[in-house]
Amino acid sequence: MPEREAKLVITAEPPEAIADAIAALTSLAGQSLAAAGTVVQRDTYFDTLEGALRVRRQSLRLRVTGEATKLTLKGEARDVGSGVTERDELEREWSAAAFEEARAALARQGIALAAAPATGDPSSVLAAAGLARVQERETRRRLRHAGAGAPIAELAIDEVTYRLASGPVRHHEVELEAKAAAGVDYLPRAVEALRAQFGGALVSSRHSKLAIGAGLARLLAAPGGAGLMAGGRLTSAGYARLDALLSAEPVPPDAG
Image 1 (cartoon, one colour):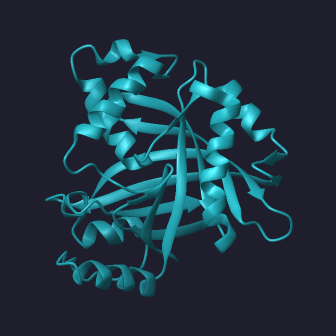
Image 2 (cartoon, rainbow, N blue to C red):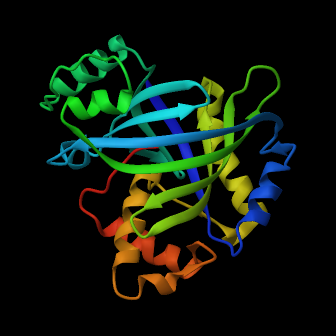
């Protein structure tokens, strides 16, 4: 089913104060905000050796949260206005049936994965199917639900640690995701409310975490890249360079 979300990158130095201030909000754009817990997620992304998913702006992810493992296949993001994007998403608890469903979905698009018994470690199963790891990261996610009763949207304040060849790099961002029909109209209002309150500390971005991690690796490997870092994260000037790099890519990686 389609996923509709908006993303704001925290480029302030240091970003923790802005993240804490957003997490402390009790209302946003006319809706109450309720704390919905904190989770730690470990994400591993896979692609074929030829990069077939990247070329199609898709992604395949294993997400481990506590004892649960989910397999997620995401399609290309589509802009739907006011900093909001939409994309098709298939997300299932890891199982043999989930693996076969994802394999069949990819096969319909001409990406053939080898059949593999979906037993044992899920990463090993995907490797046996012909996929390679392309990114690993951990995310500490503070969740807030917007709306009285059943939430119409979810606000996530994310602290991400990318595990790059050059070492760990931290990144902070805020994601807003519609959870009900009313949430679709709410997202752009919520984005504008956050911008009005926090100004230039927040920058709208359509780049996924996968794309940002891939861009970080390229940026830091380039001459002068290390000078764009401070305290284990990008400076505001570094984020401007990263956005320019990703916006210039003809086929940027895309996923949440």
